[in-house]
Image (cartoon, rainbow, N blue to C red; front, side, top):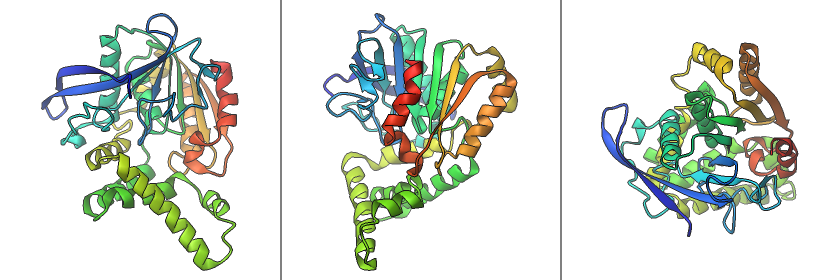
Length: 321
């Protein structure tokens, strides 16, 4: 976080007509701005702008000599305003329900405008970050060469909205909201096969129960130590706003007009953004004429595979970079 920069966006008007000052924190890695192709990396729900380096959460993909090679590219990453990362944390956005992924995408574009970046080589992101990447592409279909959404979709499903609703109930009513919400989320991010394999060494019922409970408690406590409740409420809320105003006609217009090459990467066992819904998105955009390719990570680990199956992900991404 030593290299965290801040853009102040004053007089930003929200759909509820309130006007707010937003602080957009960002980090830059690799080549200096405007001296190499720029790759924008959008973080997921509990992620942040530190995508590489000592505390980097995507080090297996981003670094010198990695697939996204910092010797060749400028990597830029914004923090979603209100995610609580950085000194200007910001204004914890008490009116968080006024924000949507489309608004966050617009805020990111305004940040890019401030930095005088008119074109991106690529936008890449997993989960919520990938959905914001979709929103950005829909808003400016000629401003990026490649769109790489991973383990995500351009519109929230009823299943996802239902899960977000449960998370919101936990966050609003639990005595330990972050810990309990995280426990529920971890089971959504994985699969029964993944969980059972992880704890297969525990042969006795009592031991097995203790092990899974301890694992869930650990993840809950870890998130509670580094995440604020207001930030978690915002990030959870954003999930159910993904593509909420998107129509088939807008999708068709995007597909026929965009110059973007889209590489959609799904996880075959994803229970959060299912393979089936991502295949439907691929088929629909392909039929409308989009330059789109479908790729798939094979894994028992569910949604979290985009943070685990790095060898497969490296293989899939290498031709794009």
